Length: 483
Image 1 (cartoon, rainbow, N blue to C red):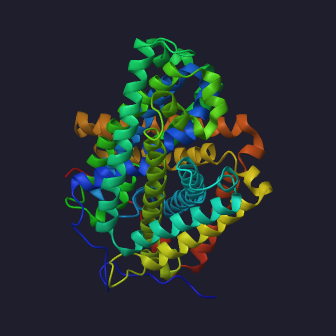
Image 2 (spheres, one colour):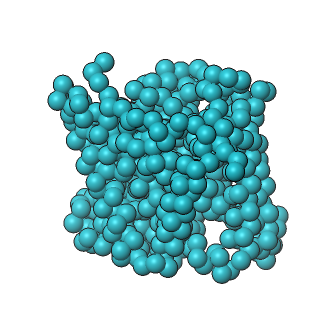
């Protein structure tokens, strides 16, 4: 039986160190969350779940995820590894838990890289139809959607393979475009609803930000899963730590900064959309709600800017989701617990080119199957909520791991106790509660991708143990001591 060979951290080509500044990693973290894409793909689901409590749910979800961002900062400060939560859990909790967590994170990323290019294809066709370049029949073609989505996936995968500097420069452009467009339209919506009172609009209300508006335990659990998806992606900064300047501090700071930047745009947009549009309009418009919102504010072709922002956001987040997945699998292969080709660094590009290609290939196959098969597409219709649950798992367990890793020095300072202990612990517990509630309330059919992901992880970690020739599964865990 063949085994997984352990790759040395220093032998052969390595990732290109000291390439990304704090501003680069912050831009990538914000772009990874993809504000325009997230709003377009998730707002109607959040409004359907909690109604006018959508701003409150965004704020509620922000708090535990911010606690996890604190955990990432403290864990990365002690151990800047591009595997991030995978590596930290393996070294501080248990190697098997670490491997399983790496699998869940990679699976969530691949699932997203299946779903996002399909939306990029849809938005590309919608933009072309808006310009009058294609017919409405062509714009609704599932085959064209799949092929254009595939083309976008190939495009961003090539950039990830080519190098981190090109990727960072591309993300600066994408995040600047989408943030400015969404923010400008959102502020305009608030002003118009307040000043002109168009039909279907309502006055801004602070009650929208009250936890009492989310509809009880059921609304809180479903809304929090969607809210976690809203903020998912900032942790990409941690996966780029080996390529960043000040690798022990900058990635963690970038993650925290991006959380506050994102909170601003999400809250303003949520309040603006439900000020201007009736609730039933947001839910019935579905993924088109953000563009419909822009149409109420500006005529064509000015409102096409929103379509362009959504498209650029979707493409950017596909790239920045593939990016951390390629770094996690590289770290796992480097530890000898994944096939060696995931751990090979291109001498020319200084990226894990082979592993990136393999992940992109899996996503491409999944994209074609889910787009072209109505049966499979129906099974994956709740993919955003499912990804939110997977993210809640690996974020939550990282919060628990931080409190555990710092257990011996928590009472050495108030900073350690609160920021490295209490807050990550509370954030982790809340996210595990969300995971349990969503699966319990939604049933097996809705939760099938979650069940499959968790179910496959158990035999795969056993297989990794049997095939591994490294000492990964035999290493003693560590706890952090005072610096």
